[in-house]
Amino acid sequence: MPQDDPAAKPSAGRMYDYYLGGTHNFEVDRQAAEQVIKLMPFIPSFARLQRWALQNVAVELTQKRGYDVVIDFASGLPTNDHIHHRAPASTTVIYSDFDPSIVEYTREILAADSPNAHFFQGDASKPEELLNNPDVVKILNGRRKAAFVLWGVSIFMSDEDLKHALQYLYDWAAPGSCLAFNAQGSDGDKDSDAISGTIEMYKRMGVTLYSRSLDHYKELLKPWTLDEPGFTALYEWDGVESVGLTAEDLAAFKPMGGNYSGYLTK
Image (cartoon, rainbow, N blue to C red):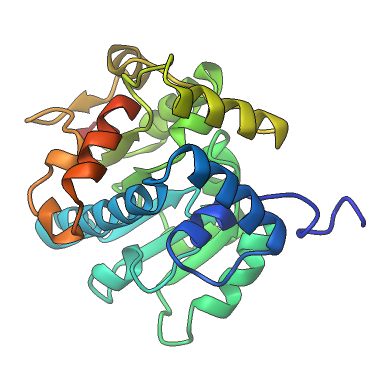
């Protein structure tokens, strides 16, 4: 099988789609996802929690804070519960993902009635490539007061790459810009079989997972300023009961870390 065939090896983005019950994935993704589920049976519930929170972020950034430009990195597949479905129709939403197969599938998902939602191939660790893309520059038309979203991707980024991305976004953005950030995997129990097994499995897929403390994340996020009330565990967000998590789900999540998230501003 050709190495550039998207079905040749699992994709974290397509595995995530499978966890959510989506259909834009291959057998190789499903097999890998099922192996993760064996280690962490609550992963589908966790994925629903992540996606619910992203909808919450979309409402907060656009309807409450009033941003009319949202730039989302490592977007995955923007299915019918993604940012542009929760933002006002006038909002410019720019999605990006490193996986070319995700970009291809997205052309099928983004309907003609979403003219302000755009998708580009781009690496979250190199935001300059997306923001300097001539098509993106044309879409933004000089607008730099924006809301950035880094959600469900930080665990895949090294300290060096994450610090570079965060600093570049800060320098590029106009004052008053905002960053919705998910400190994925923060303060998890690294000695747990679920975490160590998952890290090893992704390693076999050629993907490194970076587990950090929340305090370390805070250092990497400087000079962005964390809004009150600070970072909050996703399972403690207002309205999270609507996701339908069970007591067993919550008990299983906690050793994995709070998956703390929050808003930062320039």
